[in-house]
Length: 172
Image (cartoon, rainbow, N blue to C red; front, side, top):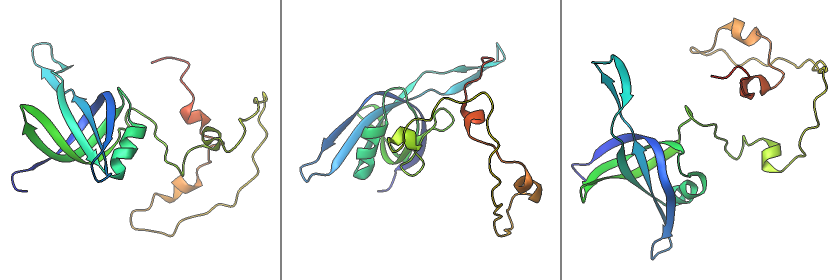
C-alpha cells in the first residue's frame, strides 16, 4: 500500500499479549508497547523521560505464536513494521519483534543452557579451588578482511561465563 510509514518502535510491553486465531486458523497476536521518548531539559541541563506513547502492535503467523509465548508485561522490545493512525491511536502492523538485549538476556533453542532446558542435572557445588582446565587445540578462522587482530585470538580464554554473568557484589 502507498502512504505507509515504516517505523522502529522501542519500548516496554504493557499488559499481556492476546493470542487469537482467524477463521482460517492463522494465529494473530496483539500487544501494546509503551515507547517513552527521552527529552533534553535545557533549563536543568539533563535528560528526562517524556510522555509515554502507546503503540498497538499486531503480528500474525508463527511470529504471533512466538510473541505470545515469549513476551510478558514490562519486557523491553524492539519492533518494526508499518505505522498507521487508526481511531486516534498508533497501530504497528509488525513485521519483526524481538527482545531488546540492552535490557534482557535472551536464549534461543540452540543456545539454551542444558540445565535450563532440563537436559542435564544441575552442577554440583563448587570447590574452593578450581582444577586447571585441560589445554584445548586452538582453532583459528580463515583470514578475512574484517577479521579481529591476531592478538585477540591469542588472549587466554575464560574458564566459564560466570565471570561475565555473575551479579556484581559492589552494587550499581
